[in-house]
Length: 306
Image 1: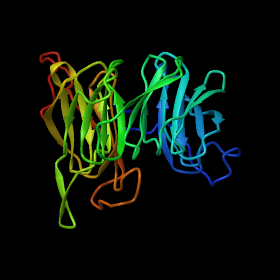
Image 2: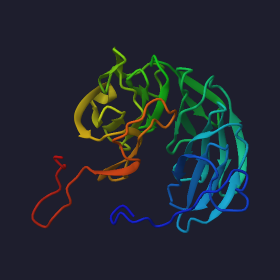
Image 3: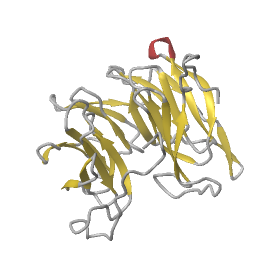
């Protein structure tokens, strides 16, 4: 419960191979998604499994198998119970959760898929890691569009609306895309600055991106000591840095609340994709960042200055 900070439900894990006998995952949970009606929760793990849960009771309803490597991304199509999954096996799969049914597999990426997102249309977008591409998958047409513009591994992606998306890479760049253009509409190089790594200046990797749906507000995370807020200005053709929010650790995930009242950050001592560095002073935690002050009878709602 975000307001009280209390845990409502905990599903304990178990040993590998015992998933049929107990409720929880037996390996690292890498991704999750909740259906837009709040009925289903989907979780994906390093052991190639997707588990479907009743979101209200945390009762496990079904296990989907079929991926040949870790499940790295999940997203429900808005307004439906159609689920998209991405994996380190380089495939995207489509599932019908209401019918507990597999639908189809989409091929194209040449490296592990590191991120996935979808909205209302029957399509999804993916980040292809070191294959250097972002892809838009058009499900009914059985076609895909390939976008390129980053120089490094593309590690995170988020749709802003049905026409635009944002992605981040380990070359430090943040890209703003139109879904009809194969090159970025705007590109912020070294979006989180540079770090001194063994005497060399290297950009901070972009490890997470978030977009407040159907607005111009974006957020990015790295291990630079802050979450950055951005504005996608000039008709989504410019990235304007707004402010920094201090936060120690690897920002491994970011998500705005539906109303934009707060931003949730998943913080780790290590990067979610590998154990390259460890930030000892960081705490593995969920950080809730308020973006608006609570209204009172005498004062209107204003942005939180902190």
